[in-house]
Length: 256
Image (cartoon, rainbow, N blue to C red; front, side, top):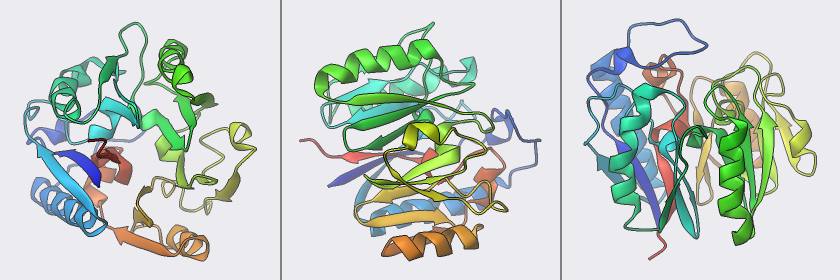
């Protein structure tokens, strides 16, 4: 069974953190409908969807991917890269502890789950504005003894690594080479993003399904040439918050 931890949208989402994008008004009602559609798609893909609600005071609370890193043996609670988001982790940790033992990354080490991509026992971690070298070192200390290989990736044009890359399967990545260094992925198959859809690299997979943003038809066509089942979803309001599909959930297998 797949578990998808989500969080209902804060009414303060228009005060969300932005780094690379200019602020545009977010339609709260439309965002809520898009979030419902997102949760419905997760269920269709076979995931049990858990909706948290304890962090509504935090504008970015619906972006649960950033709060933790989950592998089969452990849930790593992240040290968020901006002060406004550090209050989000307690609710996620409480729920995650039902499924995994947990460990913490603590300041001055910083890491967010949006900078982490998993392909089997290989873990790629973006060096970004939200994740520093100390954060990668601390994650490596936790995961290397458990048989994982942690590989840093320089992120150079986007907020997180998952904005610039995503795993299509354990051997293949979709990548925007302008925003993330392709060098660390040299031993993997790479699908390069259409240049006129630079935001299209953020996808997620549940079982045998890849979920992509409906706004990027060329990317969807590329994915369908290489993967059997691809579902498209509109999350236009969350794009205004500098977010992609994977940001809205923390997906892992039930370890119980």
